[in-house]
Amino acid sequence: MATLEVECPVCFEVLELTDDDRAGLEVGDVIVCDSCNAEMEVTRNAGGEDFELELLGVLTTCPNCGEEFEVTEDLVAAAPVVQSSDGVEVSIVPCPHCQARIELEFAPDSDAAV
Ligand SMILES: [Zn+2]
Ligand SMILES: [Zn+2]
Image 1 (cartoon, protein in one colour):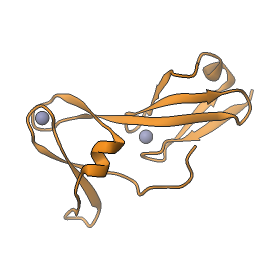
Image 2 (cartoon, helix red, strand yellow):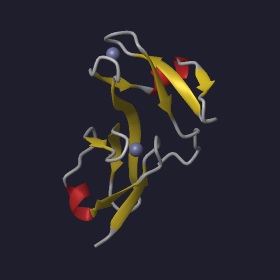
Image 3 (cartoon, rainbow, N blue to C red):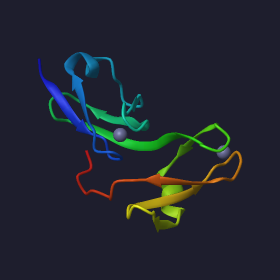
Image 4 (tube, rainbow, N blue to C red):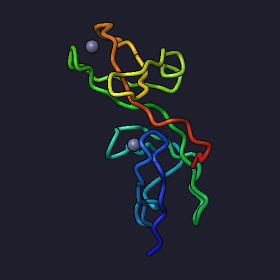
C-alpha cells in the first residue's frame, strides 16, 4: 500500500497518510499534527502525490489560564520575535483569554510547502 509522507509545516514532523487514510479525507477536512497540534486543511486530494495541505493554526494551551486557543499564521506574523535564554528564537503571542504573553517556538519558514 502506498503511503504518502507529509511534512508538518510547523514542527516538520512527518505525517504518514496511507491510501486508507486518504480515502477518508475530503477537501476541506482538517488534519491535526500528532506532535504539535497544528491544524491543516486538506486543499487537494487527487491521488498519487497530488495532495496539498494548508496550515490553519496551532492549538495551544495557555500555561497561565489553561484555556486552549488557536495560534494562526497571522497571529505569529504580528508577534514580536525574541531570543529566549537558551538562544532559540521564540514568538511572543498574547493569550486571548488572559492576555498573558506566551513564548512559542517555531521552526524557521521553509519554502518546501507541501
Ligand atoms: Zn507538527
Ligand atoms: Zn491565558
